[in-house]
Amino acid sequence: MDYQSCYQSNIDQCIDQLPLAMAYVPMQSFGKVYDLATGFQKGTIFPDLYKPFLGAGGTSCCK
Image (cartoon, helix red, strand yellow):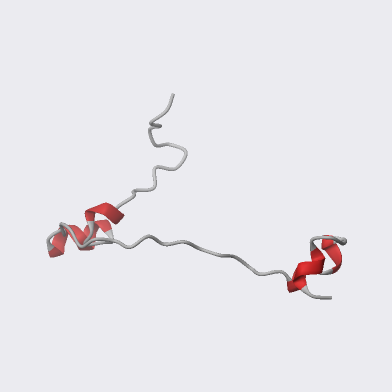
């Protein structure tokens, strides 16, 4: 059974034949960079990619 026919049949019988995922990654423009020490501390030299994990104890932007 090919993956196209999986959509019309029981999905459980052919889940291993379906495509895993499709991703879209937009082109990034080269912008500002952190200095070496700051980049090492934050884990990236690109400020646009710095997304700190706030976890359960962090503050929320939307209350």
